[in-house]
Image (cartoon, rainbow, N blue to C red):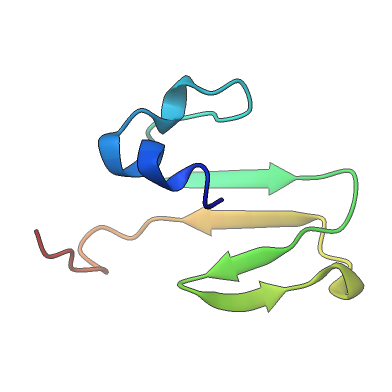
Length: 67
């Protein structure tokens, strides 16, 4: 993740082979094995939890972003 940070800041992260970028209002991710999930810097799921799928829904206006 640290190596990807400069590319995230410049907007060029979507050019990687293992990075998929797109637009939408929801997204599901399913893995063959347990996921490690961080939400807003907090650990939400660790491998021992056995989470293999997560669905993320974007709610318009729910988060304010300062520029």
